[in-house]
Length: 153
Image 1 (tube, rainbow, N blue to C red):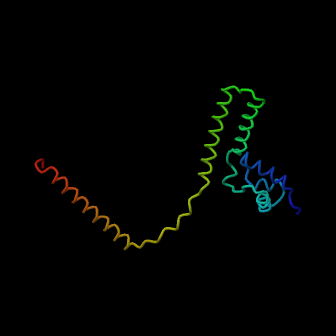
Image 2 (cartoon, rainbow, N blue to C red; image 1 turned 120 degrees about the vertical axis):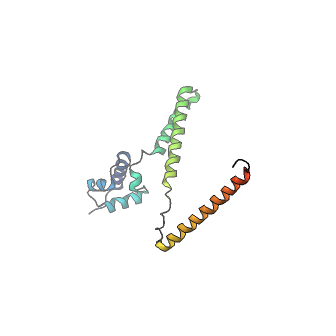
Image 3 (cartoon, one colour; image 1 turned 120 degrees about the horizontal axis):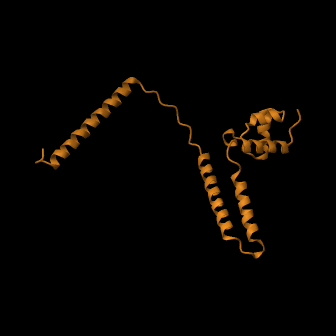
């Protein structure tokens, strides 16, 4: 099977990002194996993580369009409409916040280590220790309360 042109791979990636189509279905439409399609995405430097493919449209691209519109409003030395500029600035701030939040969500916590196996005897000892400590703390607190108010008891 001949390699798929990278332009088609890029187009498939765009469809996947914008409409949430799984990579496996895109590969089927292109009549190639999913592994071949994912390899093409890697060659293009595109993110092929299926968890990220269903996200919102590319926010950096939208932010770039906002910047372009701001530049268009100020071209030729004219003073732009304050309302239009304020609206674009507000939109840019909102998009930047979304981008930052998306990046924070991208940092996945390290996988938790499997829970250690606890023997019933160890569990019994730990619970007994906790129970003794609770009794000690209750006795200390009761003594503090009695000491603080000797005539009211």
